[in-house]
Image (cartoon, rainbow, N blue to C red; front, side):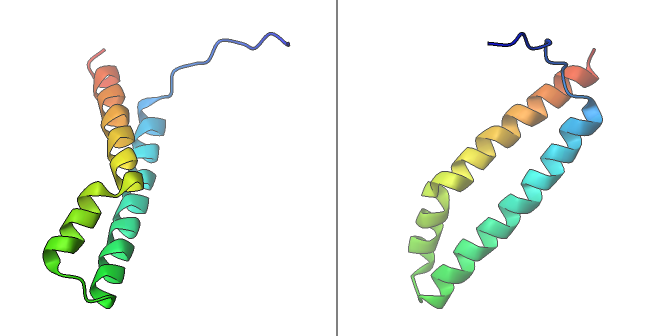
Length: 77
């Protein structure tokens, strides 16, 4: 196994770029799921439940929270 150099922490700009890109993807995915639910004529309650339980949307929200916390911690340094 080759020695790897220690990883450098991402810059605030890199973190913000990742946050922006992931937020854009999340919005597109949210709108796709919402549109599909409407196309299938699901009730609003069912659509909302599907969105709140969607595993990929949930994971994206978790990652966004982590990235934002990391960015804010670096800003405070």
